[in-house]
Length: 374
Ligand SMILES: Cc1cc2nc3c(=O)[nH]c(=O)nc-3n(C[C@H](O)[C@H](O)[C@H](O)COP(=O)(O)O)c2cc1C
Image (cartoon, rainbow, N blue to C red; front, side, top):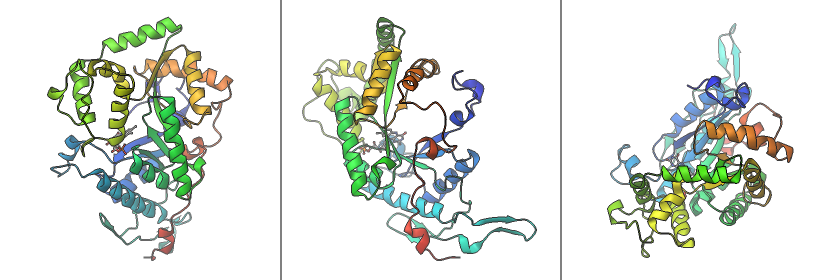
């Protein structure tokens, strides 16, 4: 476990920041009861600062570790994810706000009339409930989602409160942003109730030349053989069938084992910029398709503000190429500029992760209200 001392000095001591946890867990390889219990516990331990990054996973290597010979196809993975979230939300909502009496003298921990089973019996899961962990400070962890294809957008629109996405240019980021906000409205939700957070990899130098030099040094560190294996996995072609000094073949298409959104991002980038595979590998670098840019703190702030104010994002997942120095530089040199320009908070308005994201408490599902009491 990290202690505050491990963190850059600019964020040391701001305990609300370092104790936030958004952890990733896959709906393809987990069980909803375990996940509901684990994240409820994390929300208790962190005093309401837990989030769950919901992923469906698109890796044949992962499937081989979870009793599967082949990866389920994307439609099955997303159907399972919908049902998974129905179950976890039902379990979390199964405890009324005032269910815990904790009356030591009377020997009563919780009022059984306020703890509800869910009696779920679906395509993928059979879960009776109730959850054996009481209601956590946020009621439910903040639901984050990562998976940006059309069915990923439908899943996010139905359940997510924040979305982690890879977008390598502002035009595509705006298209993704408006599609997801429209889908959220179609799902009957407030579009402000979902925060879209593309990953960004800022390479910061005190002058533009210094930033470019850092970029060059990082590009030189790309090990072509490793990057090729990653690319091969991302586009679903064996590495030994890829010619490094030619463009990507014309006749490729996404297969079950790849992420459709990552595939499209990678192939579109290669075609748009007319890159050979070797150039593509350098271009992807460590960011693997997340927006990577080099500049001074002012230039980095300008880019961030442009995305933030022109319908490309509601915030960002900052992914420094070098840790912890890259985060330290960002926090010490870019955040003050964002604060001066009025787009970054100077203080916290609340205490929970949901407060920090300016999200309303989630509407409780009908499932818990309809469920029988045990
Ligand atoms: C930005 C981003 C981050 C992701 N992170 C993970 C991860 O940490 N673990 C995982 O198993 N899958 C991860 N995924 C994979 C997705 O959950 C999903 O299975 C995959 O992207 C295929 O769906 P899509 O085509 O809808 O994007 C990530 C996807 C995106 C877009």
